[in-house]
Length: 262
Image 1 (cartoon, helix red, strand yellow):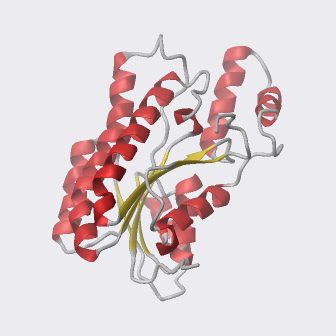
Image 2 (cartoon, rainbow, N blue to C red):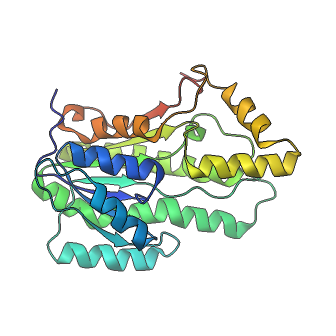
């Protein structure tokens, strides 16, 4: 199986922690040169210094704020104009706050739409010409199992994640003739700071203890445990590799069997 990413350059969004960080580590271990991006420069610098360098790659990073799409477009376009090429794009950004859809403010939907779909589109348009010229492109969106089964209490997230999945399926068809693949990976309950915050928020709203909320969530997972960021990263690394050249337009749950739909 060809998992060699030598000579490939990956841009990993939201890579200062959690699943994004794990993805950056996995891609670097397979030989890719990795550029990290997130808001926290200190955290990015620390992760950059920890990335594997089996082929003596020179990894890097730049700061970005996905709540400011115009600023993101400026920085990524300037990097492309400087001659940087990216063959693998990992779209990943923190999810919106929890709460029901019917009571969410319009601004919450707008902010989430910009952070996820508009920023994804911005990066795609900046990096696509280079992917076409180099004959290699992998666009992988880290979304949520909510695109298959909406998750109660995550109204804004369910709505926007679904839009991203539909966007991805559309461009997968459009870019297939170029040999560029577009796929979604759908993490289930994964041991990250976001999961902890969601459990804390639910405990506060319902009057349950954190442990009660946690155990109720565990009860939904046939494997009986939460996932590790590295397990999601492994699926993403496969989709980023030459071995996955004929897989496009799919949404793959990494959830321990939690999603009930086929």
